[in-house]
Length: 324
Ligand code: UDP
Ligand code: MG
Image (cartoon, rainbow, N blue to C red; front, side):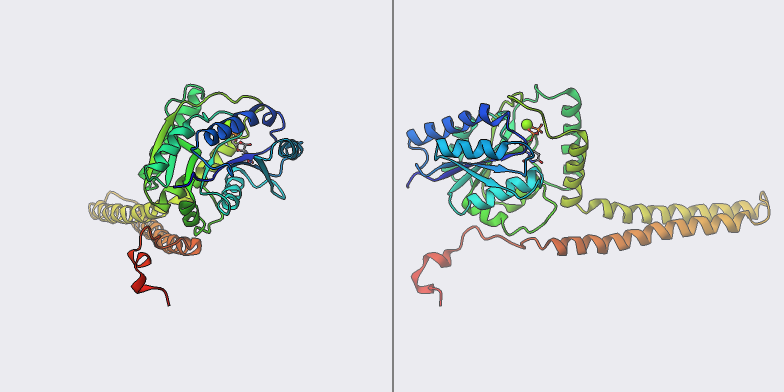
């Protein structure tokens, strides 16, 4: 087997201070891997400038001029990390056999790529980089992240615990990913849906080498909320259950109020008023739930996710069954 072409895909937003420090990390890794014969000489580092407002693109162009192993992709405006990453991956898949996506700030250990490549050679089409420890994160970020993963799993979304967007993907996995057309992207929830053989590689996450995080609490919350709502319609189903429960409770409450009335402990109008409130409350929530079920179905339909992805097909190997 020929050495595969690897593209390291790196989204960058306002990283003029960071790239001059970290580009050497990526170039060094790429050269080392090429020298060991692990990857082809045609491998590249692809920076995606996510509509930066500073000199990031100038820095990338400069790097490109000095070293042809660097390539750049510039988005017309800031589209956010997930979209920038997708743009890079979808472009890279036309040139590469495998891609590794990684942040540009040097937080993710580039040496984990060695193990990722090993896993790829063992047949994995997707290799997740998983943080072994979160020592460099604040206690707040660590705890919220832990609970977030728990809630996501409870809601039925498959996410790899402590994995962000540092991962290897084969061209085949990328082709499959390209069949997902949704606009609200939460890649780490979407990619497990692609399937194929996958595995994980563990590494320690470091501090940012320069510059500042672009994920303040507000952006983190919005990414988190996006993750839940784009992966699960279970919250809508919960409304149906709640409505059903409320209807049941109100039925009992109606019976109780009628009994209280029969014993004569009430003022005029109390029973009828309460019965109406209870019954309507239950019915309303239940109806909302039913509407929610349909909205959930429509949501799934509008996303038009692929209904299946074929991994192997013996028809393609036999000449007798040649395509007409
Ligand atoms: N990023 C991007 N577009 C944005 C925000 C961030 O491409 O709108 C990139 C950023 O340059 C970095 C990566 O996404 O390479 C992760 O961002 P950051 O390191 O700020 O997030 P953190 O590691 O703090 O969660
Ligand atoms: Mg970072």
